[in-house]
Length: 430
Image (cartoon, rainbow, N blue to C red; front, side):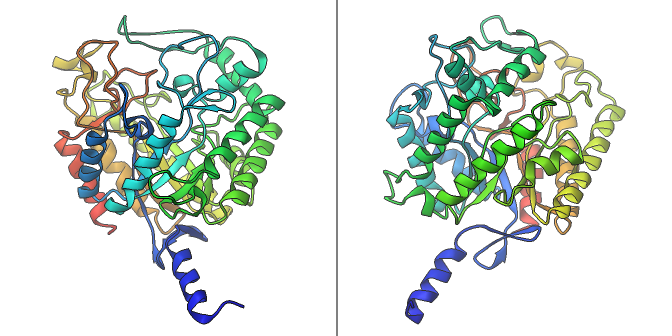
């Protein structure tokens, strides 16, 4: 039996981790509400050298986010390269060059970023994969396993400055094979082991024992696809079980959008190894918002949909006795009047009339549901001091992934009105 002092030390160490208690999160014996920002580009920006590295920017961004009351960053710990050469609209350099082959410089970038977060009183939700091609993701695992080329969906052509691409249903059918392909599953779980058994090269702290990591996310936006329900549920359960076995002190979340109703939500969060539910809300992407309509009716329709979405997700999370977090929400800038051109809404100077109304409504609704299942929210996404490139093919690492136009949903350090709304939400919860 441990002596009393050792038992107390163990309890104190455990308290540093974010834990789930019914529909709430706790840290250091206090309720922990996620006041979050998406900062997916952190791993590459944190590299010591290279065209994507910018540690001084990261420190500036973290300082600014901290001043706004942000306490959680959602970051990516996965990106996969194509065996057919440079792929369109993808993070570079990729973390995984081929199954089991890692770029150590990128890994050390992740180490460095995680090492900075305690200075700013932040934790991290770390995503172990992606359903979409902008980081390689699940379709790249399928490509490796089947030695076939990915049928890309519609994406932003940076050179031509237009959206173009293939059939979305064909892409879904291709990527769904990830859930039941033996090789893809083997390589994905090897990646989980590689990351979770890593020791941070900066701090010397094993990832699995680091309280800076709030949660491990299985994948960004794994899709609920009819015909693959049982395979999806099995993948979630087995993957979450592995994460829990390797890092039992950390929360495990799915990364789900939770846009497909109660049955899909419960199927994707029923595993006892999933300890934190997930949801995202995208009014433009889901067809609720007309970006060229300046009327109040347009944005109010989106806000009404959001109200129902948040309340439903709170109800479904309560039914599983688990907290949930709105890990993504966002909206583009105004795209009418003076800013009605096809590229104008991506301009950092475009107004944010509807965006600010939407952000204000989201934060209010989440706050109203903090005792009913919600444990916070994280906006998408922080660009900080970055701006869209002058030359279209240049990488500037705004808050928009490479398959989208730079500036689409980015929040800049000069977006004073939006930042004020974010800070106001955070300040009421500190």
